[in-house]
Image (tube, rainbow, N blue to C red; front, top):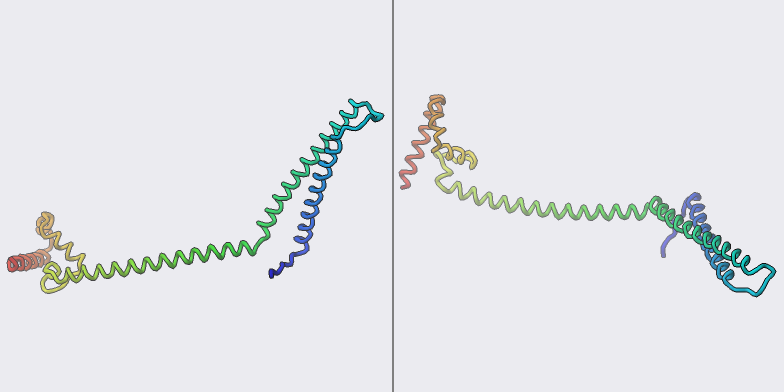
Length: 194
């Protein structure tokens, strides 16, 4: 059983006005159409000449047809007013649509969060395996100290570059001594492996 909402007085009177307009327009269409049909009958001789009667009937049909068109336009305006009234005053359905859309977006957010978490876990596992492989190899050890992955690659790239040798003459003597010691350590470790 559905419970009917109690409308404020202004809305109630507005809906009654819409109902009255609907009944009046339908009655106008029906009455005018009935009169047009009656006018179409050919009657016996009357006191008015047949040509005059035909002209009068023709004019009456035009007026009644115009009344039917006016009532139809009024009904179309009534439909438009009802749609506007429904859009502006149907708060429960608007709230229901908003809550439904909110629920859909929350579901989508949860799915995205789950995918991001699984992607994070997969990347963490792969990164762990790469670090294990790197630190277990000879590249990951330098002078007995394990270097972070990015720093080791930067130093490894700078070993054979000509910029390093030209920069050695401009560098501080302490830095060049340290770099030379590291290069000699690296060279000795590579010769031991071969």
